[in-house]
Length: 293
Image 1 (spheres, rainbow, N blue to C red):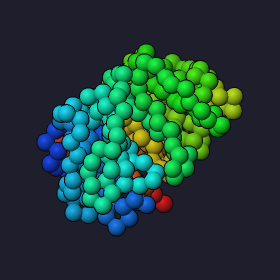
Image 2: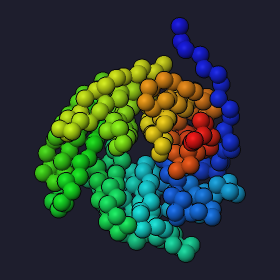
Image 3: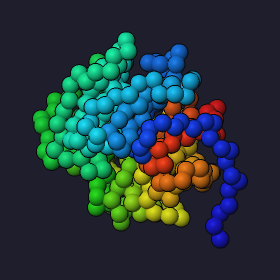
Image 4: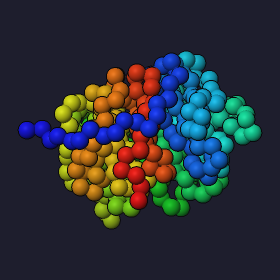
């Protein structure tokens, strides 16, 4: 018998106006938008929209990917700069300071597929960027950073990016890995795939990955997984139109939100615990579930 959950409250509000499927979401850090909280969204039509969460309206639109879908967004630590990755095989760096919306630089990509870039912040003016591709350049680092990557064969791989070698590899999905997230406090991560399985895995002191448990969902297709910043809950974006929420430590299912009328492609948490979800139905829902204590 399937577990029954009390229906969660509806979204706090809904953002409309992208006129295209919403592929990716990113909250602007409070340090960069304390007076007016902002949300960035990337759409299938190649546009990046900047939303004011106070007025619930679009305050700026960035058009830099030639009509090709935007699949990843991230602000840089020094503030007022945004990275956007598109299916046009370009990663763009935007200058957003003082109302500007201009591309400062761009990086050509070898391959895009479903793979998103990732960034490692090592200081206000020091960060490292990993982008999808077929090759790699030399990297100099004294901290020996590690990179987790999910692959189409269902595996999760830990890379030493200085030595450019695999430290550990686990196969935890029968379908391609669509998304993963990692809790550095608990040295534990989670991955979702095109199948039904959520996989939870750990990283030990010997830099070895181990599958801890799996959780099978009702329907296949987990487009994105996101651990809330306080590491209390986990949210998933489902191709079955559902947003699912789990207790991160126990993986106990907490809620299933069936608001969207098409596949949910992305979920993102704000620093204060606010949850945003974007869908093929061209809407962005904003939720306040299990508020941070």
